[in-house]
Length: 78
Image 1 (cartoon, rainbow, N blue to C red):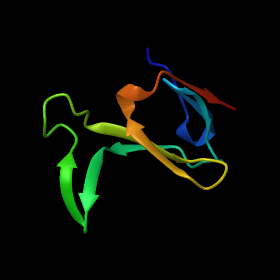
Image 2: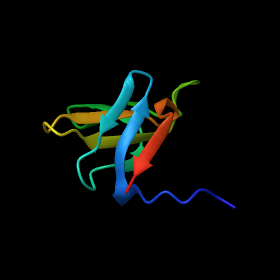
Image 3: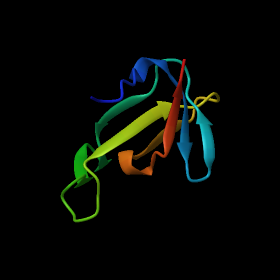
């Protein structure tokens, strides 16, 4: 059995500093990497303790948010 969370329906993400609003259907999960000039500077899993999966979403004012998946404490969905 698994928990079924439809990423297209996530409305809020709980991080250590509180709940963050997710604009409609902008929440996604993917590889967690830092880039500089189209080059991967640090990819998740390349260094011990750096998670390989991350989350990204847009806030209500158009801000971009990204974090390692391990930083998410909970999600709310429709």
